[in-house]
Image (cartoon, rainbow, N blue to C red; front, side, top):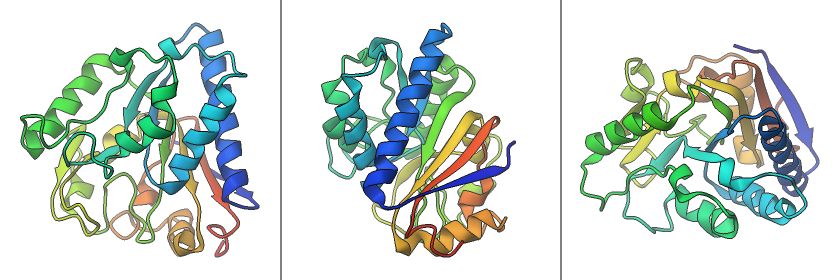
Length: 241
């Protein structure tokens, strides 16, 4: 695992633009090296801003989008197409405008897909084992004001699951109450982990995670990349460092 590197940006817009540029560069370099890059996406307002920036810049990049594989670190267990799903936001801001191979877009199962929560988590784990490369090239994560990342919340039993790839999360302190999340074991199988965080309300959580807090208190402290761990922040999110 790697020591975290902190990069502070003036504002959320500058942050989103920098993350988009970094992501396109990773994709271009991986493909130039003959690899099919695998990326873990996140949700939230700053992720939406990043996705819009990637869409805006994609036309000038050399990325072959048919050779990009996409995953999610967590998802709300609600019906397909719900505005609460991370995948819905990503499709609207970015994915629907790219020439992606549908077989390479691995959404987590929806609540109306015929599986219960635990079955849906197990199905996604099987999907990742079958079609994953063994490590995300880049895993992007947000951080909540309580220090959660993906859908791993402080004090939640899912924090101690170390023998599964994905888990069903019940009684989430943040609605909706049912979610699917990759576990620490899966999240840490990433070449690069990028925490993308905006807003003063996240500042205390960012400071806690970077100080090495216990993962039961601040789950974001428990994820590091194998080659790179970046905390990409705007000035407000970095205000308590």
